[in-house]
Image (cartoon, rainbow, N blue to C red; front, side):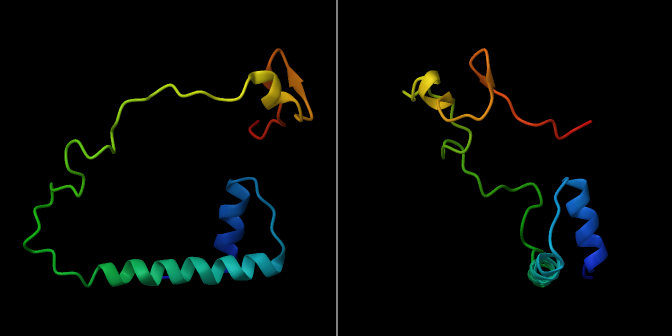
Length: 96
């Protein structure tokens, strides 16, 4: 199983990205390399592994609560913003 250049172009279009043909070629190779690695995972013997087990141990911090930490003031964060309005960054719309 692999991906072709057309599929990479399609994925890029879905993400509203434009790439050169050189980049498309590189991404095609990289995606196929990832898929080959994923196929290697199929070779693992998982017969003795409980399908509901998790590598996350309870209390390991993966689901820690949010913590408020000091940050830079809003005016400093917005200082170099090309566009801003009422203390918020204005960015181009990417979804119609």
